[in-house]
Image (tube, rainbow, N blue to C red; front, top):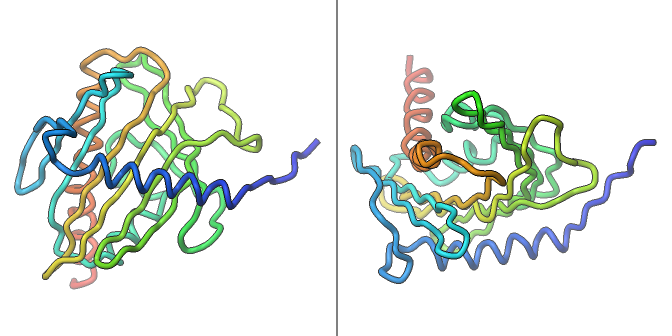
Length: 217
């Protein structure tokens, strides 16, 4: 029996709104948020923050890109190409696009060290524009049409968000992610994930640089 598609747009918009409010609260590098510098390279910074309640690690990447908000957002919302700029993402696909500001998508992340199973996520994503700022907020949800896949651990993306600020000559980008992989991970794996996720801002710049280079050939 084929299950009919069930989508609660109003609930998805509310999830996005709650994620937006949380992202605005957690993203700033304030003493209260307790971000710790993880690495810095070529003007790009990665911060991490262990969550005291869950023990999970939040990751924050930032940097300036000499590209417009629209150019950067076009990369972010093109889910299938995420493996090109995210070293631990294996694949991604859009399940359904409801509007220019709301879509449901699926992502699968690579296994590591041969003993850690792949993780996947079903995510609702909402875009919010506020003056010179564009926010892209993603949060996990459960959906009857997209149950867990055999051999893959279904994770919980508590927040995955972009803040794109229009500035002279380009865009200042902040990326924050906080996920529960649903299983024990060795510290080495956590550090690799934190580094890889934090580098996505820099990797998007390299991807856009390469596209620009190819256009100008």
